[in-house]
Amino acid sequence: MRKARTLYYNDARRHYLFVIEPPMSVEDAWQPVDEVSGTPVDTFVYAVSRRDGLFYPSKVGMRFGGDILPFKSASWWRAWHNMQSLIDQGIDPLGVLIDRTKEKGMDFFACLRVGAFGEMDAGLNVRHNGLGYKLPQVRDHALACARELAEDYPVDGIELDFTDPSGPGSSSLLGYFDKDNVQEYTPVMTDWVRRVSDLVRNRAGGSGVLGARIYPTESVNLGAGLDVRTWIREKLIDYVAPNVREPRVLHQNMEIDWLIELADTEDVSIYPLLHSMYREDKYANLAMMRAAFSNYRARNVDGLYTWALEWPLRDDQRDILIEQGNPNPSPVGPKHYFVPKQINEPKGVVSYESVLPLSIDSHATGIRYALPLYISDDLENDPDRKVHLRLFIHGLVNADQFSIYLNGVSIMDEESRTYFHDSVEPFVGRWVEINLDKIRPQIGDNVVEIELHRRGANDVSNPAAAHGTGLAQPFTVDEVELLLE
Image (tube, rainbow, N blue to C red):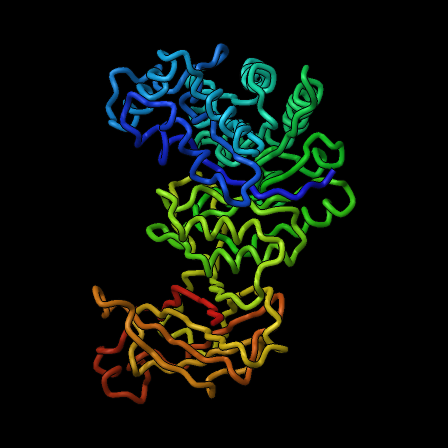
C-alpha cells in the first residue's frame, strides 16, 4: 500500500561515528535521532554498512575497522572505539539507535549496501575482476546480513542500497556482474531480491517494510542488472528511492516518469532521495530545497527523502525538514531553481549526465544550444511574482555578442544586468541576470537557449582578429538558475 513518509538519511559516519570523540556516552549515541526529533521526519534511515564493514556487532559479517588495525585515519579510529565503548557498556551500537527512534515516535529503516561485502575475499568483488553476485556465496552472505537485521533487530524496515556498488571496477561500471554477463544474470539478482522480500515480509514478530535505493532511469538500472520493473510488478518491494549517487548534488527534476507511471498501477511508493549539496563545496539553501520539494510534489510522489543536511543541524536545516514534511507549503515562498552541473568522477562511477557546463567554441556561431529547466510554479498566471533568470558565463567579455531565448522567444529586450562572479576571483566570469517581466516561464518543462553570434574580437572584420589576438577561450555557460522572489 502506498504510504506518505518524510525520510531522513544518516550515513553513520561523517556526522556521527567519525566525529564524536570516544568513549561514546548514551547521549552521544542518541545524537543522530535527537537532531531530527521534533521535525516532520517520521522515518529515520541509518546506514548500517560501508563496503569495508558493518556499523554494528554483526554475528555474520565484519564490524567496520576489523581489518585495518592499526588505524591510519583518526576518523576510522574514532568509529571503531565509539562502537567498542558502547559495547563495553553493554549497549548495542545499532540497538540504541533503534530504541531511541521508537521513543521519538519514528520508524527505523536499516540501509544495507548491496555491494558491500568487505569481510569476504576482496578478489570476489567485480572491481577486483572477481565474479561478484554471480557467486552463490556472495549472494548468500548478503542475504545473511539482511536476515540478521530483519530478525535480530526490531527494525521497521530494510532499505537495499543498489546505488553504491563498491566503487569503480575495471570490468564493470556498476559492480554486481561483469559487463558481459549483466543481462544473463539480471534474473539472478531479481531472485535474490525475492528471497530478501520473503524473509522481511515473513519474519517472526510481524512483516517489515522493504525498500530499494535505485538509479533514476530504467536504462541505468537495467545496465546494472537491476530489473526494478519486475520487482515492482511482483510486489517484492514497498518503495523505491530514486537518487543520483554521483555527482552528489541536488537534482530538482530526476527522470522518474517511468516510476510514477508504475506507481499508479502497481501500488508502490516513491520517495525521491535528494542530496543536500548545491555544488561540490556548497550546501543547498532552503529556497533551493523548496524548489525541489515543489517539483516532486507536483509529480505526485508519496514522500520526500533527504540526505544528511549541513551538520550540525541548526534552525536553517530544521526549516528545510519542516518544509520537506509540510504537505501544504506556502506557494509564495522564495524558490531557487537550477540546472545541476556535471562533476567529473573517477572512471567507472556512474554519473547523471547534465548539459552543464556548456562549452561553445569561439567560432561555433549561429547555433542555438538548449538548456532544459523544469519548474512547478504557474508564473504565467502570477504576474506580480518577481522572476529572474540568470546564467553564469565563464570568461564573458563585453565584446561578446549572444542571444538568450526562453521557450523559443528572445528575452534580450527584458531588463537585464551583468555582474562579477565574486570578490575573490572576479575575473573568472560574470553573471547575466534577466528580469522576466513580459516573457514568463511556463509551468512544467521550459527550454532556455543560448546562441553565440560573436566571441570577443573573433570577427574577420576586426583588425585584432586578423593579427591573431582574438579570444580563443570557449564561451562556457556554467550555471543556469531561475530565482523567484
